[in-house]
Amino acid sequence: MTTRNLQALALVATTLLAFSAPSYAETVAANPTPTISAPAAEAPESASASSVVKNFYAQLVETMKQGEKLGFDGRFKKLQPAVQAAFDLPTMTRLAVGLVWTKATPEEQKQLIDGFTSFSTANYANNFTSFNGEQFDVTSERAFKDGVIVETKLTPKDHAVVALNYLMRKNDHGAWKIIDVFLDGSISELANRRSEFGAIAGREGIPALVNTLGTKSKANGPS
Image 1: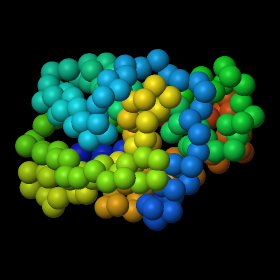
Image 2: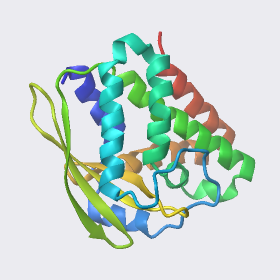
Image 3: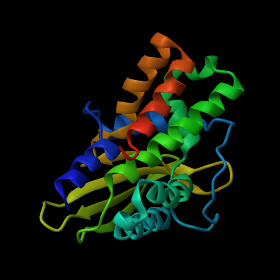
């Protein structure tokens, strides 16, 4: 794996704040799913949590293999359905925004979900640009309260193995969805997003956060 992709892994799936995975996961798992749902392809209700992660990895690797030919826009278009199918973006958006979410109108909530979806997809499209022999493996799945933890490992070609754990639970349609990602079992992506995005929304308001998400997504595009 290239240094660029290792840095991308830290950006997409980790945080600057080291939260304890079990305690933070308990907080996430206890929260209800928001009523607004982003339009996205759903995995079959019979699909296991592990298979959802495996399918996402397969589509990520396929896109990486075509990455240079596709360019940013092509990678974005190819990855967006995969991101929407694997991640519970409405729940992740609400948790990232924090208490300000309850003050947002339904239209503002939709704008936030759309912005967070584009931001998340753009991160993958911008950073996972090519394939260099990386291997993504699902190693185990274990129950956790009303959800599961899917444990995986990323084996780069010339670097140490990286452990990635996915906190998942079923959405209102009975499909397993990712609601958080942990590096080495302890470093939470959502914790970082909550710190950053919740602060912007609380300090500057919801429209400012919507604009920030749009700006960050565009910044990930081709220069």
